[in-house]
Length: 568
Image 1: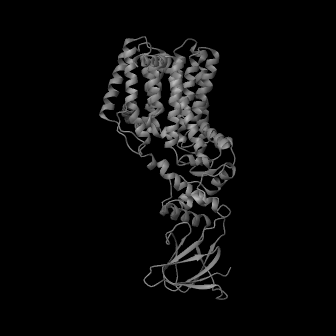
Image 2: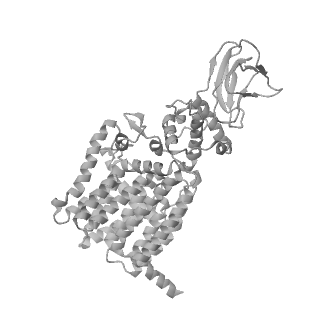
Image 3: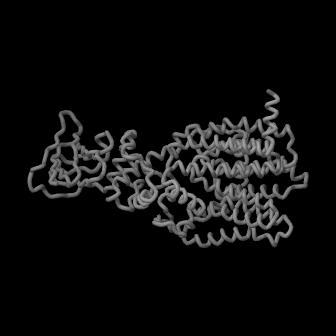
């Protein structure tokens, strides 16, 4: 048995064996993430990509085609052309199937971890690099980056940035070209690439022929500067950096290091369904020890350029986080911090990793793994991504049902009735933009059969959305020319209300009592689903319900007797 274990360890300590093990871990991590992300759909920031929306001078502008103006328009002040292209390519290949986007995010995770492993392997050996990189694949404390496809911006930017650093190690012209192209793609995906660009600048400037090779980082920097100047026309806050936040920088840097070390050691508390971690005293102690260890390493001298580069990358990243008042405990920032901390450690320990230290690294990673998996899975069904998904899919189903009549500018999440019914999510999509996406790439909404099987609160939401999408409301009307087709809706003795069917078309209503409450429902079982109006006594009003493709019958509910006529 011991011999087999020894042989297995020896195989893992070879490049081929370590890569096979890492690939196996990638498959397992992908399966776990795919299972955990089941039930999600496009939400929050992704709505802008779903509808090709751009915020320009405080107004939401819809782009009906894939234009350069849309691709390069900032989102929340960020250059995200890479992410937009990835989303558009995924729509083109897989339609609106959200699973495809989760798979793309998993691929980006595997690429970034694989490149981090290759960088670390060259410094500390296969086994010592393998263990923490496997942990990165399951880093549940960075759950937002792992579970939400929109955060592929971070993962893709990291992957391109790490590819640029690997290309520089070629020490030739082709490597410089590849590094320049890769870091430009990283910056074009999101500004994590700028932090890595700082490290590339350090590497180039510390090498011979620095002036002749400066174009490697000058060209990407010029590209971003040119975009930044052009994008100012959108009047977005392109930089949340503020001199007023300078006092936050030391604490942010320290907490970011503590949070990363706490996640990598699995010592942070597990916070169910949350996208932040908790910085503990143990994490702070680890941060102090790590800082002292780096200081001792720098004092020894013979410092590799790559260590200076990664220290510059992390410090730049944390300084800008502090200047922008970003929470260092946030899971979307934790992943890059963890990658940076591991690569700083690899650079600092390069050539000094023996069997005991390697064993210690492996043990720590194995002990941290359960806590990270628990954080990834704990309470995931109640997190924002899962909780919002059925709400959005319900609203979208009603937009599709009303597609021939809905106002293209109608936004369900801004409709007071929808908000009252539990809709009104963070970001809404205009009906026209949504329906264009459905026409080209398919529907992410519930089918009508799926909707009918949802819980009552979602069917109530469906009724509210459909009423708003169709613009159903009562209007003053004249008396019917004949009482033919009329009926009196009476309340049974002791009842608070009465319910009656409403056919498609126009119905005339006249209440017998003042302030008679009137509700509509279609998919909901509750008779008082969507409040429409208070009917005046003795006056006729009309209610028009357009026909559509659903067989479900509308019903009206009143709090007092009414006369209902169907002249159509």
